[in-house]
Image (cartoon, rainbow, N blue to C red):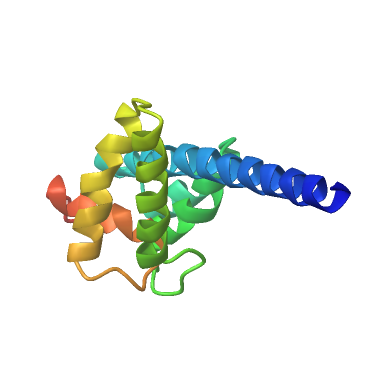
Length: 142
């Protein structure tokens, strides 16, 4: 009987940890797109790429600190998180949101952007490649 209780407690802990990861992922996906939008805005206001990296160092968000310089240099070929892997995580997050009938408009807004990033051939690139897609959407040529 004690063994059965131990297994149930372990399953509960595993489910809690899975939910925590999904919640963290849902936040990360929205923040990542916000970071990209920030870089696009900086660039559209004629701020030089090296200034984007300097600006990223002053931001509170780790994603912008990590991905900002990658976006500024357009050097997403060396991935810390591949778009294709992230796409799989997004499907899990989407399923969790749907299963709990949780509205997530920011998450929903990111899905077409990540889908377009995959379609643009960035599956093996870092998620910072989302910048390439948004840059092209706003016809930025700098």
